[in-house]
Length: 87
Image 1 (cartoon, rainbow, N blue to C red):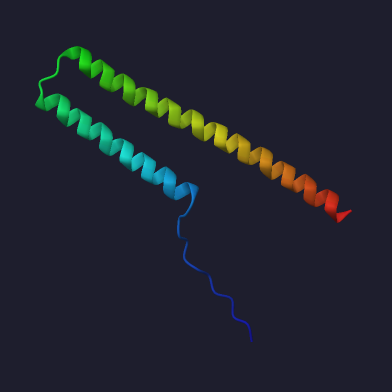
Image 2: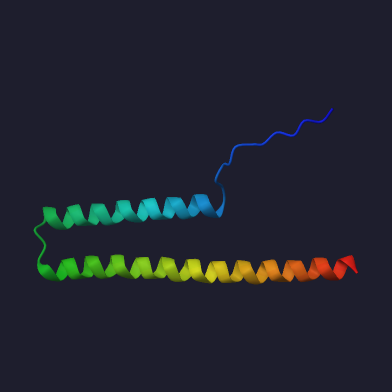
């Protein structure tokens, strides 16, 4: 008798890399902030810091949007191929 078991969900691939990228980016920004505090940086350096963080966030959002759009297109193409192969 065959008994089906359900394996626990283990994040892999894209989810794992995205999570690692977010964690490392936050850690990097915290370290840069501590460095700027330690050297008593002038106001101009803080604008560079905040601009870099904002640009990184916008870049990640744009990359995620493009990735999702590509996946949707791929899924539609696979569905069309499956429909043609059934005929």
